[in-house]
Length: 362
Image (tube, rainbow, N blue to C red; front, side):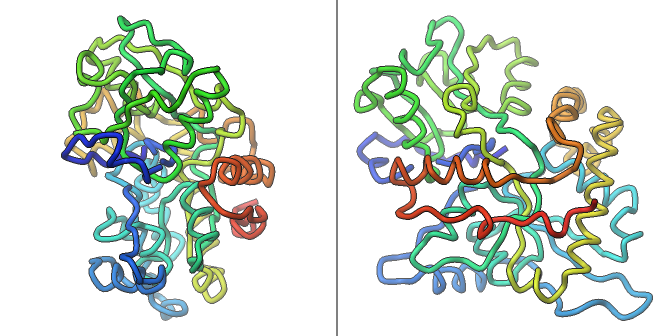
């Protein structure tokens, strides 16, 4: 899930420069002030963050090595495998003392780049943007948590808005992430609709109820937002973005690390991913029990909702693959090409510069 509610509805004019990432969803980006480089902005964010800096090298014999994971958003079922690994002692068995935290000031990518955490949860889009900026961040994707994009556009069923062709003249409420407008423009144009007629506003955080009479279209994550609609008997039309354009079937969310961590602590990275894999395999085989474990860490969500979401994701974590976390060049390349075509990035970047499967368990 990638979605951070913002408290005010803005007009389309205020969003003219804003664009989104997919994965529920589709945390907010932190832009560098005018005249400040991305590196300077990164350092500023690092100074403000409460994250825990990783130690160099390994822990002394017999001691657990401290590891900090910075999430992309509040804890949810995308992250269940990590909480299972924490709860069941898989990390401890691997010699790691893992601390999972939510992002503070600054984007997760920036915090990882400057050493405020060892691993972060991000999205293919955000990593690509970070690596193609004027001042690239030294990060790389090392595993995907879900093999396919599980997000899509949603409308209230009674409005009979069932495809991007019906978005003309409607109001879309989003979160203003990089690429959001580009995706909407692409799918509307491909459907023969005029994107310029779409009114884009920032969501006020009121959720699906706004679809009745305040806005017409939102971007939901099937394992989370759609489940909330189901539990509240709220009827929706759901349009998976991967069905609208195959290039939108990108990796979201993913695990990232800094180049420094990968170079200086490779064995720790392997141990972390091996233990994390155990957690996700447990969640796949025992979704109800995994949801109960997650519920101990996020008690604000109902167990029923977590179990429905977990049962859905149990089939998605390793869909179409027999190796957890593995990524493919073609997925990275296809979305990179899409991003370049619609002006989200200025230049394409090879997939090999964005991710690696080197540290994944065999």
